[in-house]
Every structure is written in structure tokens, then in C-alpha cells.
Image 1 (cartoon, one colour):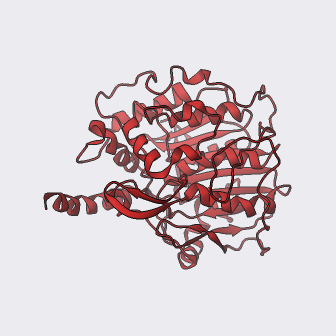
Image 2 (cartoon, one colour):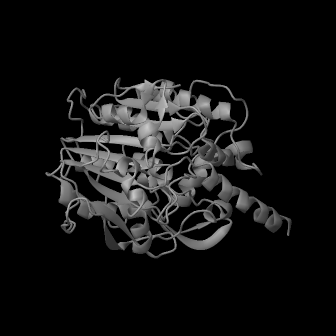
Image 3 (tube, rainbow, N blue to C red):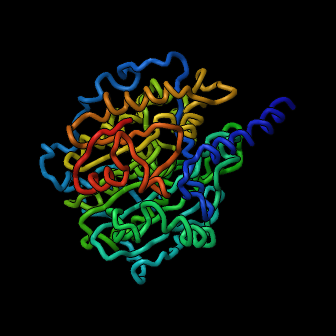
Length: 440
């Protein structure tokens, strides 16, 4: 009885944290909130900024998986593609074979119009169907955008996470938020305004990184389709044949849970477009080190969603025995994809991510999840200064003051600034091939 009463009190508080801590971005219209992530945690304990020790001994000396010098400005995606089986057992293995994504191209449509494409083989968390939105543009660029909306790793978080998404919800989003922020075609300062877009809604509760059909949780035994990563494999079967050879630059981006999803899926998307620029823009999905994102919580996510199956097979540091180490994926991406540009946007006090990080407090036994703002800020500095450092001029960060969550999906994309630099100008430089670290 006490447990049920506590849950009844905390669940509305959780929903409030998920929805009330958002910025002015309208990513939630149309059925996917885009304002929450549910993918990170803190360790609790001391709020000190220490050199990473619990994940790897030296984050800057990770083996170079590309085997190349990385001086080619076009990036290193000419190497072995990360393939696996997009139809169900994708493991991120590197085969050296041509792209496995050889399905039927997406249907033609007029430029500038959003269209919904059903994928019968893709599923949402409740087992219902899934799909993607597509909008063609006039320029030879492609944005692959991952939506946000919380996460599902216990009964509490699952209750505030969308479990389905359909064409009707997409139509609502396309008529509103689908024309704002980074999606705006009428903003001359938007560097991707005339690019094509693939919009990946969020309905699997696994930060687009799950590979566990019919998964269950200790306190939520009903089967859940944690298949976000597998779904992306299905989508790429048709997206890649549609755009490969027709675009010269791909921007892999997303907000909140979709920011994490963009990072988890970047490697195989970059490999699928060999020889082209493939840029990563992660908005509000910081993969912090174990000192700030508790290993016990990362271990819960790995077990719930089968995250290890979504990690590149040759990233040995991505799957340490203690269950932590997700930060090493960022190190791996920088080393493998030398010459490409990778970037993170975050508020220094992002209230939504701090809430989710808080599930890792007290060895994942915290009754009221929360992360002190200073600890979160220290974690961002640690990420920038100790992990996103090599090779030089690969990773960039744009940190902003305050607690707003997500930036690129609404009005803040064009107006937000940090230390006198407009966010949209920083994104323009990123697209142009220049990265920098900006902070208030």
C-alpha cells in the first residue's frame, strides 16, 4: 500500500519534471514530447570534477578504430561500414562489405511537403506500428532527426513515456513544430533550411537504441518492444537508397532522448554514406562519464534495452564489466570518424536531464531523483575537457546558462546565445566544418 501511494504521488511529479522543465521548443506537438530524455544519471556523493577513472584509464588514448590519419576533410566514412542485420539482429559489426541498405527507395513527393511513411516491420513500445516523416528539399543535404520524449526503464518512467505514434500525431506535428526551429524553411539564417529531412518519431522508450523485443522490467512485467535501434535499421533500408549519391552532407541530430539516439546511431549512418560529410548535432543528450552518470543506472539501461547490441562491435571500452562506460562511445566516434564534425548542445543546469541522472543517486536507490546543478555543470565540463578532446577539432560544445531543456526545435534555435555567440551561427559554422567550444 505504501509503495502504491508513493508511486501515485511521484508519478505526477515526474510528469511535471518531464514537461515543465522544457524550453520554448515545441517538439512535443503531434504526440512525441521531444522535451525529455530519461537516459542519464548521477552518482550522488561528492560534487567534484575529477579526472575520469571508473570508465577507462585514459579516454584520450582509445585505439583508433579507423586505422587512418583522419586528415581527409571529407571524414573517415570511406572505411568499413557498420552493418549487421537491419531486420532484427543488428549488432554493429564491421564487415567491410558495401552498404547493406538496399531496400525500395522512399516515394517521390513535392519539395517542402511533409509525408508520413509507414514501416510495417517497425514497432512502437506497445507493439503498434511505426514510421517516419520525410520532407524533400532542393539542396544536396539531408537531416536525419531523432525525436525525444523520456525513457522507459522502470514503472515510474514508463508511465510518462509515449508508447505509440501514428500518422495522425505526425500530421499535427508537421503542421506546427515541423516548420519551426531547425525545420524552418523560411529562415534565411538556418543553414539546413533547404535540405531534405527524415524525421524519426519516438515511441520505443529506449533512446532509439534498444534491441530487445518483448523486453520486460523488474517492476513492469508486461512485454515492451524496446526496438528503437532495430527500427532505425528498417528505416535505413529505404532511406539510404533514396539519398545515397544524391546528397553530399548528412546531419544526424536529435533532442533529448533523440540526442542520445543520434549519437547511438551516428556510426552506422556515417558508414552508410562513405566519402561524404556526416555531422553529429546532439541537443541535450550528454553522455557523461561514470562519475556523473552512475554506472548502476547505465547497467539498468543496458539490461532493459539490450544496449550492448547497439554498440559498435570494435569499441571494446563501450561495454565494460561494471555496466558503465557509455561515454566511451563519444570517444570512439571521434577517433573513428576523424575529419567529421561532432557536437553537443546543453544548458549548464538542464533540469530535465538532471532529474533523470538523479535515478543513479545512492547506488540507484534514490527515492527522489535529482542531481545538484553544480554537479551537472561539472559533468559537462568533464565531458568537454577530458573525453571530447581527440582528435583535435572534431568535437565541439555549446553550453548555455540556465535550466532550459532542448534548443533547436523552436524559437530558441534562432535567438539563443552564449558568450555573445548566437546558437544558429554556431550551428552554421558546424555545418561549414568548424567546431568550437562556447560557454557563458
